[in-house]
Length: 195
Image (cartoon, rainbow, N blue to C red; front, side, top):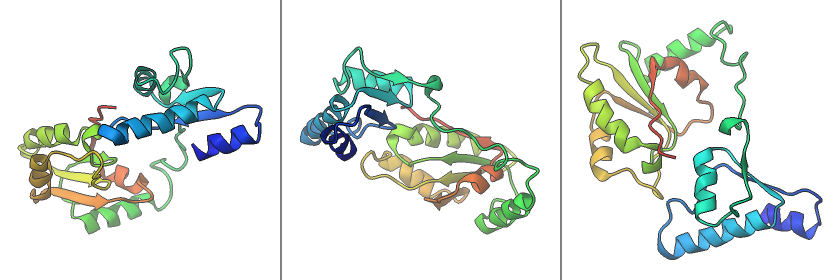
């Protein structure tokens, strides 16, 4: 919003509103109305709106944040590229780093099922908790590695949170600045997001 206002005041010849997520989506009551107004203002001050997912564009149009004729999704929603060199299994020292992290987290003796993201309802963590109850029954005694922080704005159900927190095979890494070494530990990545 501040960038859109500043660009409009400066008469920038091209203003683009990039929507990577909506603060309106999970808000309730007066906060939802306020957030919708702020997001609408930002969109209207710009010439074009780019959303990072088709579902996000659909939501923005449905809520009136962007007009029905406004907004695009580029490259089928992919907004970030993947650096192949950085994620290459042949990169020197990567395996040693992953092995040390695996030992530190206590997941070096079993298959690892992982999740990376905000621990909230919108990211499907309640669905993940249900799926984990079945997965953990596998005879290989898998571990669940959760990389991300619990979110208060869009909380996971208390039952799911208590169940996951009390599971001795669930490992919580919390918020990390570089998720790459954590991905290397995972045999399976769960991505149950709803948005």
